[in-house]
Amino acid sequence: DVKVTQSSRYLVKRTGEKVFLECVQDMDHENMFWYRQDPGLGLRLIYFSYDVKMKEKGDIPEGYSVSREKKERFSLILESASTNQTSMYLCASSGHLGQGAAGANVLTFGAGSRLTVL
Amino acid sequence: KQEVTQIPAALSVPEGENLVLNCSFTDSAIYNLQWFRQDPGKGLTSLLLIQSSQREQTSGRLNASLDKSSGRSTLYIAASQPGDSATYLCAVGSGNTGKLIFGQGTTLQVKP
Image 1: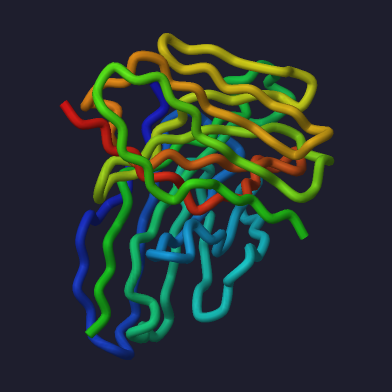
Image 2: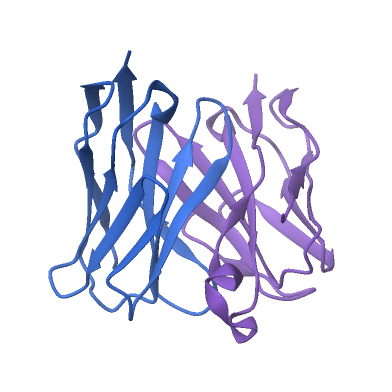
């Protein structure tokens, strides 16, 4: 089974701190994603990456940056955390469509990282 | 811009009942559609994926259908159990990057 591991389940940070959220997948997937989930707003895509050193903005990239130096690792960075970034952050990965079959397209999620910014 | 809607937002049923969760999307030019389950405070677990060329997928007591022309998908759960209690989300993929647009989910409670 594909495993997507998020390094921290719960974090509490102060306004202005720099925050790193790490995500690692073990199935050689090309695509990786960062979503945030908020009550009433659902899941919203922050950034995604379809290859090492490649990144694309999602729907709400403001206040965030990402890093993908290795295929298996996709990091989300909050340069200066603010209270409105308090949220559940979900990382996901999926394979390349050239791999064929439904399994390559299935998005696999990590357990989530709940960030509170005070 | 693709929008995904799930109705109802919450549903409560007695154990053993068959039920249907609904998902609608505004742009029929989709690549695939996935149904996920989310338990409180946890990540999402993929249940079923339907490619745009397919009409339905089945896994155990779950059956998902897709009607692209009408912009609808349904998730049918047979003989519901208390362990099925969770939030169910549908998500539409519109390209080959794996990027998904999510509905807000239906929270299901199955009472013993």
